[in-house]
Image 1 (cartoon, helix red, strand yellow):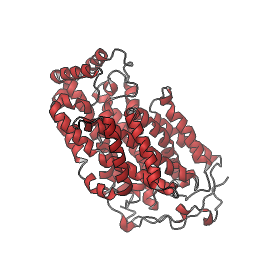
Image 2 (tube, one colour):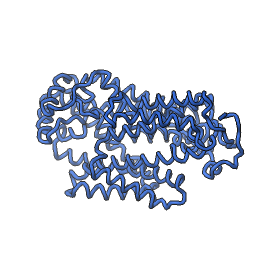
Image 3 (tube, helix red, strand yellow):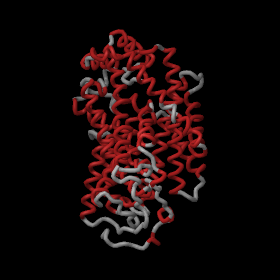
Image 4 (cartoon, helix red, strand yellow):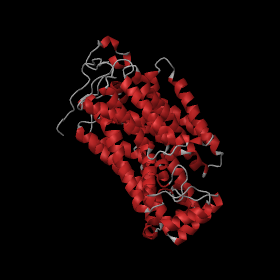
Length: 479
């Protein structure tokens, strides 16, 4: 199959034939759209609280080898997220003015693009909603005397409804609510900074072993870095692919690049970095460490994350209120997840009432929360990373092989894209099957990229279908 044979535009599905690029006049600078929107994702307390934990509960978590190694892993993760997972989709969106489910058809085909990444993006958003439902409801339950499972049902249904019908009302509130977790992080860091210099990873691991003698062995330096990569990249994978949707609102390559460097790379280092330092500061302070150990003994487990250390740092009274406000700040992300899912389903399932499709998805999210599975965030992130790692890898190679231009949709199901995704997904999902694969989302990206390149060279790309007028020039190409 050759990519040089063009097919008539009549072969285009309706959603492609009717696609309209975002005009340069509707675009804005990076500090007005890309950077603040992405930064808000990383300010979500579910992200930064887990930066010091690992999937298998290893002794000492990601602080097992000290603060320096953990921060190094965080910086590497931030660079991987920006340069490998976000940049190419963002450039595709900027150059074409088209969203992900359109530009993705050059990699997965005009028909295949419906499912990958379009429909898959919608499905995985309900995994995100489940995580949000679980942690937000537990935080709310600290102040509301109601069974958390009841709150999960109400929270999930309300978020799905608002995301489906009233996202415009959430947008204004979402502009300010992300300031809450930023203020909380700074406050917690100021209170614990004095203990960071005294943090000793060996004593930290020994304290962990005291409360959890059966915990998995301590990770080495490379293991810590791989664990952080798995966590951060898995968390970010879908948002990286969605860079196309952010990029279509950008004026130039510089906007795409700066938006990612500030809103993604810097935001990751700041939010998760502060969280790691907070944990180190608590256990570096004899007084706070003793309180943390006592609280851990009460909860029958060693406390590794900054969120659950809030009562130790500020006292139970203040902690309840902070957890309550952090949960409120998590409501807009829940609505946005439902909103993205709804848009995906409206496109890929146009004949199905969105209330039905989104309602079913919301029910699944609530079940994930009520059963507690959504609380195991790292296995969830592994699934997300396994799903979107090879998508981003294949898209990057597609971009490079087309010399930085969007080739246009390919006919049917482009074999190169689907083969590369399948191989990458198999590798990326192995940790959830009990197979130790370090930095699985990154490895899934690499496998997807290499497989797409080899398939393309072997002629396993379907023919390009012309899509006239799909590549408007940005407002200022040299900016």
